[in-house]
Image (cartoon, rainbow, N blue to C red; front, side):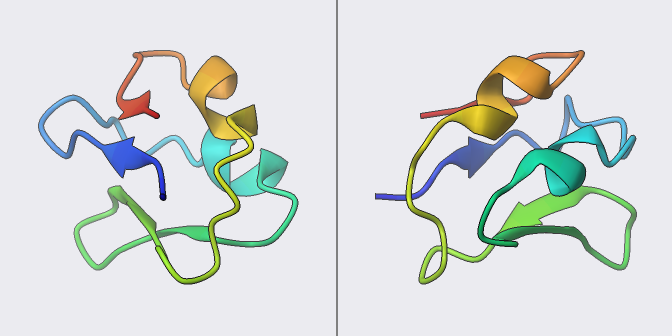
Length: 57
């Protein structure tokens, strides 16, 4: 199972992108975080890094 990004809460800072060990997170065309569910290993590194709690497991 992959993490979920709340696009309404995400501020597009990219902090989660930098900590993902498998590169599953990126910023989409709107500048919001998005998760590639096929790549995500559900480690939770991004959850604790998000400054606005926009990512959940």
